Amino acid sequence: CCGGERHHIGDAVSEKLDYVPAQLSVLQYRRPKYACSACSACSACSACEGQIAVAPLPLQPIEQGMAAPGLLAHIIVSKWAD
Image: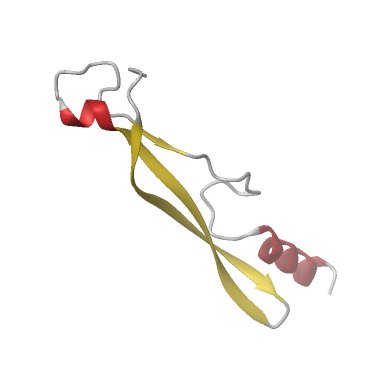
């Protein structure tokens, strides 16, 4: 935004529940978070205004849901096909 280099300030971690036959597992998506190092040093910079950049999550069948595609598929098959 201002041309300054961003530095790593942490990670955004998202978790989903997935189903593997006879076992559940938790999938973690680790996405690095970055902030502008030039703007964090001076509070007068108005170009970035403290913006933090985080990579987007992969597409999910249910946005903001905890279930991964494998778990959803198992639930659907168990409910209607079994």
